[in-house]
Length: 371
Ligand SMILES: Cc1ncc(COP(=O)(O)O)c(C=O)c1O
Image 1 (cartoon, rainbow, N blue to C red):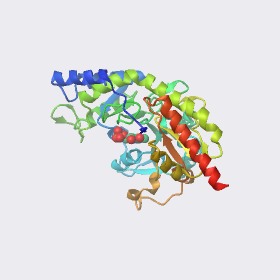
Image 2: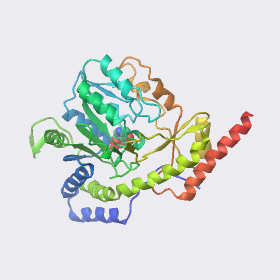
Image 3: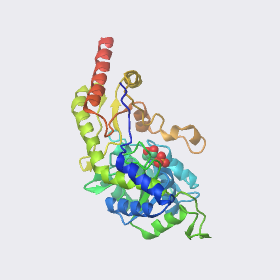
Image 4: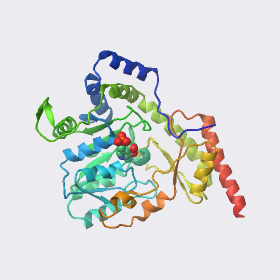
């Protein structure tokens, strides 16, 4: 038996929507993208949304629109996918890494304040709602008031997650989403920038389309980061299913929490702030001993699992020499402990039971060996 870590939940409706676009003859950015932008903004409670061809380009154009340029500093977490930080570097700015909270794996507000006090010339902060678990928004917004930085939320793993009833992506000046196939909703490849600010949205629209509002009149230097109508047609169907798909992820997470928390000598189940509703892009355990052996054992049993992320960004080879060496002990420790197990919406009850039985079996055998 093979149990995959993630499966895109696509059905007949998505197929039909794509066929309609193919039949229409309008494949590039058109009515489907415009409708998707409007529906996505409405879902999040934001005024504007700009569709892009990836989450990476969404982050990059958001930073560009916010005026990030050479010599600026942007604080972010080292415990994330590389695009969070590479988008800062592509603007000519420097990422400043701030350590994370060991319970949520998200940026730690106390350490964020210490970093803000220490670093001069910080223009903004990118927070990441990692694994679909919202950051500590009350504390982060208090710091934003006090230190006056722009806030960009990387919501690539958190479509539909909320904090005190408000969806993530609606707290900062801007939010950026990814629709890569493993994400909570997909368009194949794709991304979205959201904001309440019309000027910022207009700038993003220009940046993704060669710096022009009107064809062949280029006011600023731009790119081609546009989403296609094919992708948007899939996204519109996926958006309608999103809450239901997230509910299934939460049910699996509840099950795992219940049956795995008694194994507290060996592992720690995910922690979600009381004010938050998580969407479990990943269900990530912290394994206190034998993490790599457990990973190998589960894979032998046909259970896909993964380490997000094995190397914190400040330790990545491409960044060496670009910045001063820093020690971020929590992120470094988490990289050796985390293990994500299948939590996708199509996971069956018998499959998740197999996952749990295999984890129990591994630790039973380990305990016997240690005696
Ligand atoms: C936290 C985070 N940020 C940014 C991205 C980049 O998104 P994309 O792969 O759509 O470019 C991802 C996707 O993997 C991600 O997980």
